[in-house]
Length: 77
Picture 1 (tube, one colour):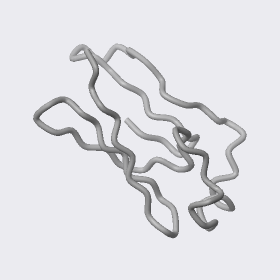
Picture 2 (picture 1 turned 60 degrees about the vertical axis):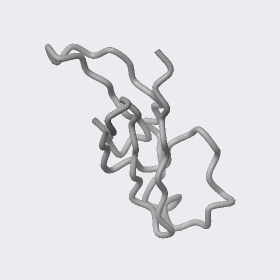
Picture 3 (picture 1 turned 135 degrees about the vertical axis):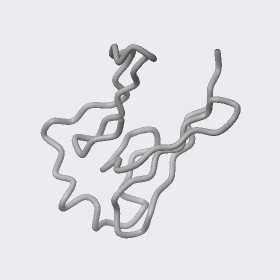
């Protein structure tokens, strides 16, 4: 589940939190989301807004930024 504090929370099938990826409660996403891509840190979410999964278990996170941003989180185990 993506949220606007620069994190994505993963749950198991029983809705228990498995992991939180990123976390920035001080996020200034309303300002940062308007910047160009060269201001974004690779591997750090700015403003995750949506997520979907593919058949291999990879997660795609879409961010609410002016220039658009999609991050692929590759399943490794």
